[in-house]
Image 1 (tube, each protein chain N blue to C red):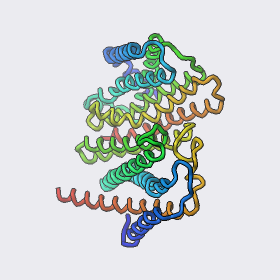
Image 2 (cartoon, chains in turn red, green):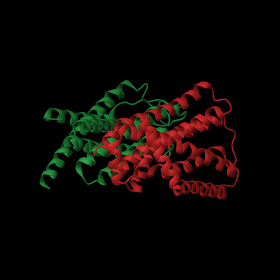
Image 3 (cartoon, each protein chain N blue to C red):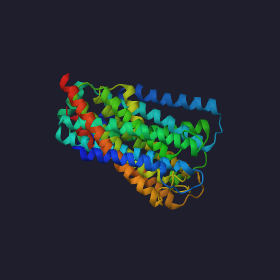
Length: 218
Length: 219
């Protein structure tokens, strides 16, 4: 457990030290939100609002998460390989990227609301599904980034491998958001949609933990 | 895998029977689909065959991770190729069917999205394989991706169509159902068609495997 915390701390320090990466993603979010505002104006219908928001966040996630394994050079990788178990490596990456994505998600949400306004959303579904969506995106892309980096890591490969894996999750999140638009969706449907989101997150994390050791062994 | 003439003949006979009987069998007259219901015998077995092939590939990928024998990896990759072959046939027959019943080659339907995403995922798998030169690394990385993608797609195809209120596919969203209460005479053609195509799928897989082994030995 301590190893996991140490590795998260290391990633956090790296992030602080190389501020440009995080700032670049934030600037990307600002620019896209601005472009959306320019082309759609302030009032768009609710479904478009949801779709555009997740598309923006999806690309931000690709930028933020894809560097998590690709930035580790061979020598540094070998060093981690000597000192840490593969499960702790992937767990620390998943936790760190999830935290990063939740923070990034809320920042983007704030900007998005600032520029485009907020439709009436049911907070009981909205916030949990938002957080679950961010965690799911982060963990799925972490695993894809690990796969892409062992394959020689080019950005195109990351996108090609990432999209099919992320689409199920994205559709579930967008469904949950659409449910949040309704005035009274009923407790059963809320539980169904949040439950399936939780399930897919859990499956992604479990698969990552089980499969990552095979990628790590070189 | 599929050895001996009995299996191959059985597969060929079943398919031949389903193709001929599919054109002549008495079908129930339903609104909208009418005679196009016969496409059930040709379209749906493609997806069954594809999923059996992808399942086989998953099996060999898991087996590769535990055994590290390159033969398992070869079978996994060839099973994906065979599955993609059936998948593209399924997409084509499905699109023709959709044009005649729903008026468009492509509609926004959860089942269609699921099919498209799984075909894209396995095309990504082949691209991933192409991007790695070293053989054992390629086998390991692609096995990991295969398992990861398959599990997520199973969830996707399993949960999402049920969550959606509206699907143009039968049995969901108030369509004239063909699957749930399939006409008993149609079952007599439909089930043999599925079994036949699955047997042929394994035969194709076997041929591909042997061809690949010869190619590797020659190079």
